[in-house]
Amino acid sequence: MEKDSTRSWLIVVTLGFAVAIAAMDRVVLSVATPTIMKDLHLSGTNAGLLLAAFFWSYTLMQLPSGMLVDRFGAKKVLGIGFALWSLSCAATGLASSLAGLIAFRLGLGVGEGPVFPSAYRLVSTVFSERNRGLASAIYGDGSKLGPAIGAPLAGILIVSYGWQSMFAIVGLVSLLWLIPWFIIAPSQKEDVGTVKNRINWSEFWALLKKRDILGAAVGYFGYLYIFYVYITWLPGYLVLERGFSTLQAGWLSMVPFAVQFTVAPIAGYFTDSFIHKGYSTTTVRKTAIGIGLILAFSIVPAALVNSSTACLFFFALSTAGLGICNPNMLAVPSGLAPKNRGGIVGAIQNTGGNLGGVVAPMVTGATYDATHSFVVALAIAGSMLFVCALGYLLMIRRIEPVDLRSDEVTALAASNA
Image (cartoon, rainbow, N blue to C red):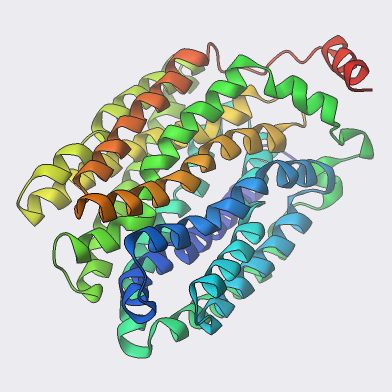
């Protein structure tokens, strides 16, 4: 299909709503966590395990999802995954034990696996480089819109109907997204073309060995660690550390995510405008990421101030920095990917990143149990920004399609035979 067309923009907006629903289905558990901890008598460490469970299956599904998307197209793979995760979210309210909750969160992770590989692939397929920053900002902004809406919504539903009914309502209503998706998404033929586009394991390992692609995975680990501390523990932090009620925490959690939601498309627009003017894609995206990381470090003073107002200000400043980083990070796989490999390169970045999601909730919960405070946990989150800088600013040399020579793939295939 034609690149940069009206339909291209409709596709990316529809993807943005999918990302928003996915993020909402993650954050509603965070709002419910303090209540669930009381009802099921869970410790902070157990709550951390519950919050991390989603990421175990979600991370494992990234590479298979990328391969499936590159083989069968995003329309079919994402559609099936979306239905699975919505039903898993709805069924979470049926659980009455930690084990049951973890089982449904694992199902949620499997279903959400194809979201970002699908988005990476479609951005590389239906947009030229000059518009990929803004396109990435639009769908990536869903990860901020979802929590901004989901956190207060979850608080209202929990207070009104209980946490069990909240999961059922959110999960079942989410299924409505499938209607516009199957109308607007490109067909398998439009997306992946012929069967020759399928990836093999030798080609995958050749891509994984590329320093620039590995750098994207390392950098995204640092970014998603701090982002998922916000997603999984911000409402709990406001209740347990700052003394707010569940309903208040839901509304206040909206503020940092609303800031990030506002900043990200603006950052994507301006970085794309510099690229349009002829500036180096590498220089523009690395500069934006560097500025964003400096602002994101505000999570550390947020943990140290006594005033809750000042704390929320620093959280907002930190998430503004993440908003500058995010569209540029999301545009990196499309810039690095060889032709027809946007899905798998994006999946490699997302796998590395979501290992941060696996670790962050558990480390935060265990640290809270050990210190009875979130100060050390938030300091650890701030330190992960140095990992992010290592990956994106040092390991990645140039943001351009990597040279995947046929002899590299052949040699790897022969060595694995």
